[in-house]
Length: 265
Image (cartoon, rainbow, N blue to C red; front, side, top):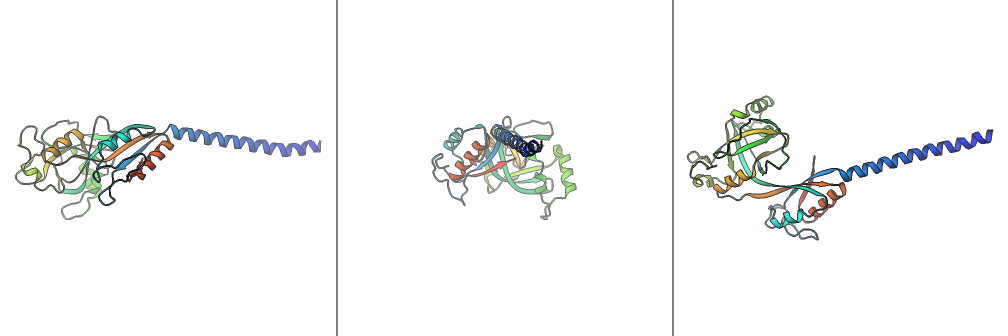
C-alpha cells in the first residue's frame, strides 16, 4: 500500500503537468491561428525629399518622384500576399480657418464610398459645386489656435463641434498664394469660391469622424486642385492585410524599398 501511494504521488503531478502543458500549447496554437485570420491596417508613406527616393528592391521598384506614389508601385502593392483592400490618399498641405481659429494641416482626399471613415456627427447636407466639403476628425479641433497663437480651449472646442453646420470655414493650399486668384471663372461648378484677391476660399464642414485628420471626397479634391492648377498627388496608401505574417512580410518589403510603414489601430 505505501508503494502504491508513493507511485501515485509521482504520477499525479506528472499528469497534471502534462494536462497543463497541453492546454497551454492548445491556447498558443489557437492564438496563432487567430492572428493569421485577423486583419491588420498599415499606413504607407512614400519617401520624402529629406529621406530620398525609394531604393530598388526584389519586391518593389522605385516609387518615382520623391514623396509621391506611382501607378507602378500601386500595382505592385496589389500583389502583396494577404492584401484585402487598398486605399490611396490624395494629400495637400493646407491652412484652414474655422470662425476665429486657424491651423496648418494635411488635407486627405479619399473615396468616401470606399474608405472606412466612421462619421459620428453629420450636418446631413450633401451639396456639391461651389465650395470644398470637409469632414474633420474628432481631435482635429484640438489643433486650432486663435489669432494670437493661443491654443483653443476645451470648452470652445466643444462649442465648435456643436455648431459644425453653421461655422464659417475658409481654406487655402499652402504655397499657392496666387494660384486661386485666376483659376476658375466663378461659374456654377467653380470650386474656388474666391472673393477678391483673398486666397482663402469658402469651405464647409459636413461632419465629424472618429479618425484623426481632415478629409475631402477625392473626386471633388481633384477638381478643386485642377482649377487651382495644382497637382493632386497620392502621398499615402493604407492597406488592409489578413494574417500577421503577411502583414510583417509586407511591412518588411515596403521598408526595404524605402517606404515608411506604421501599423494603424
